[in-house]
Length: 217
Length: 217
DNA sequence: CCTAATTTAGAACATAAGTTTTATGTTAAG
DNA sequence: CTTAACATAAAACTTATGTTCTAAATTAGG
Image (cartoon, rainbow over all chains, first blue to last red; front, side, top):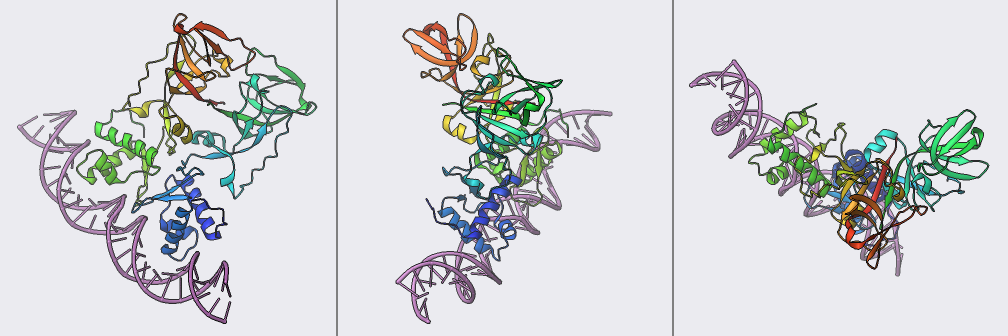
């Protein structure tokens, strides 16, 4: 089931289409859907390649079942059609945030992703995620290892939890945002902690936190 | 599309089966799958009831497409096949936890549920969820409105985050659990907060917290 | 260049699965 | 009771869709 050999382009295309179709339609495609989308001359060729993909452990096929293709993850488990967002990197106080490389990396299968609820995506549109490194966000009720889902934005309304970059301090932080004249108040979510104040020019909003996911032992 | 009338039991059963089948199999059932599972004598009866469900806005049907049933959520959007767990109720300091009614409430659609990642379910088995009410869990890095995913358990290992019921205080709390002789130390996740100690007899473990979900504006 | 393995083609086949039709039983309102 | 709307049945029909077969083209080694 392990295969490190490079896949023929046609087979790669089929696999990509399987994933795209399933995400978009909530059901797997038929052999003929694949044939059309991947511009293949015969259903038998599709069948042949699906068989190869099965041998390589990428998919599962239910015999004689309409739309019986299951797409498997690295552990060989069927994947759900819930949308996934990429975890673009780590966030920590003092660490700059990686440039939003929102391009669709073709080999997206290799990337670290988290499943998010469809509602979230519907509500906010394009999202990405960062994994929190260290306990420096503890005052935002965010622990080491948590994943924060972020909607890219360079502006924020008062009271929203934002990813803020403090230029002078060269520090990233997650706080509630309040514009107060020429000052910005960054208020920890944890009310026992003190807010910090900074001149508006020193604060760069990179995005809004729309969700936090924490998985324990 | 709005319907507040009570649904016939058979239709309710079909709807429940649709959801269960889709979660379990990653593809929607066929008319004949439904027929078998719901002990219906004819495919036309299934078709008839599916049509009614469609009119009522519960599902969508793709004409002439095999397994073309889409299950819709309250907003009329297709749901994903990611597993969902019920939010059994609220948790707050001082509030008792509702009895684990693990029974499958038939009208499960009416209930509040959260989508969880398949891995989580695979890893932990049967789970349920509680919505946190108030900021009393703030020392566990859990905010008002957060949803905690819990694995039922009456025992815990040191260091695990547990749902603990303090008998005398009549209080529920989320803390890290440490058995220390005849005492139990309940340690807030937030290291700036102080632990509480209690005799082992006074502490009743109800479950382990395996995930925390927070959605913001 | 030759041969074997891999991949592609075209067509036909078999059945899985949606749909339709007609009839019968059940319930609720007047 | 009567009637109409609702619900169930049985069977047949159509097509969507997986599968198979045979042959040809292409690629990879030796």
